[in-house]
Length: 308
Image 1 (cartoon, helix red, strand yellow):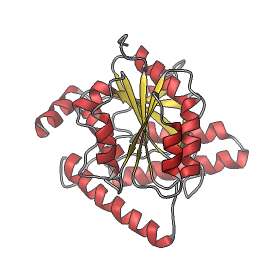
Image 2 (cartoon, one colour):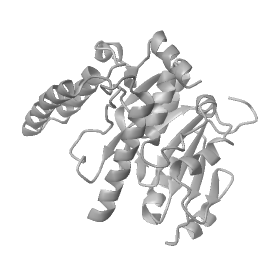
Image 3 (tube, one colour):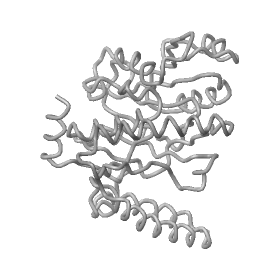
């Protein structure tokens, strides 16, 4: 780290009218034992958030106020472009860091130069996925997506930040794909690092959210799937492996075994993840990370030529 840069990590948080959640998020970041610069970008809050941000603004907490929504990608990119710390993390205002997740991610990046991004394992606290040991889906190209992550700033800036075509939904799967296809390894923390108070909203809002997700999925398929079959690993394989995972998960819950639940989810990701080795559980023994994703040279070359 440069002597002129007092912080090792920048954490960028987007917010809008969720003051109580934002307070928890900021407090959890400030609990870290490493020097962190926090950037908060507000999209026009009217619930007291702006007054709170003005009160806490300091050398280590930078505040950007907008009068309206810009879209998450644009708002985050505005800040990404000026960051000078070695590492950067993106969070939402409904995220709370737990179990020293940020410190673990920085240690992983420090010790593993081939790793470009560390996925912070996220657990939903409410909503339809709250029963899962952690979230993170496998895309139609076989990539295990990172919902919240810590990555090397030079990589993020070289990639141009988030893709503003996606605006809100889909920015994280797209970034995961671009980091991986640029030839950088991606790993997940073994422990849950983020608790997520996902706001599912009212039924009409939820339907609008799901419609946006369908639009981003179509854009993702167009960008990353190589042929009309829409890629890897096929719907049948998803269904078979998913059915096995559900049986194992239900059995684990009947036995009251959280460890077995996590094991079932881990193996689901290992088997379906195109870029995860079946030997990953062995290779990651003794490490703070697992679910390592790595592209072969031909795949990296294919996508570098495609997006040139």
